[in-house]
Image (cartoon, rainbow, N blue to C red; front, side):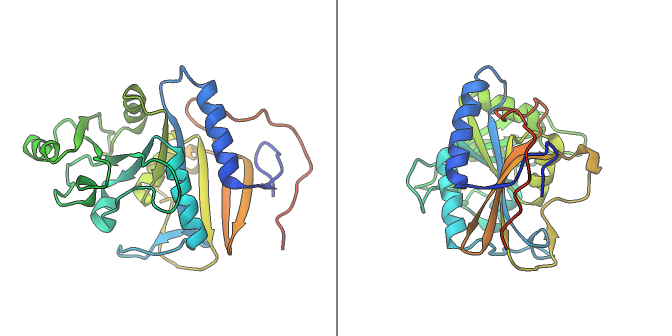
Length: 266
């Protein structure tokens, strides 16, 4: 099992690997206009993150859930889509690990953010809501009055937030690392835009037959390749980490060296 750069797949302590890579990447791209971005999510072994028709699907085991909170604590900000807020009403805080809460950022091109969401109440960090130029001004004023910070950024032709421009704006606001916890639309958009520097994926050993994590809305040539792949087994879940090709290249990635492949254990 080799990555495209012919590096072997290795078993490691994933959280320590991520911590070191974040430190290295932030040191190397001090002048880069975008923050270091980590895409992370859990999926079934057949690539699904939710049942068809919507709803929440619990995939991660307790160890993988703790890992998610450790990852949150390592990043300055955490980015989700508005559908995650509407369906799950998350707090996006660090509860199962030590560390500070990241700054929530919500992609919401039409300002559907509910005024009674947990993110607008203590102990949550008040969110940054990224919306489009023509989103409702009255709703924006209500959200600002409730404690949110609303920023307007350009939209793509499909009506979604322009992620490269948003991330540049986020870096200008002082956030140097962003964790993306996406639904399928956000995951697909992040992949197609090639704005994520690294992927951390928890694979649950069950079949779902539901909504795929990456939707086939873009040609496969647009999707980034995974490099320098490492893995860790956590109570039955397989956690995979690796570098993603970005629009700025492999930020913080090591120089590939040819090596003999190490197979996954039985």
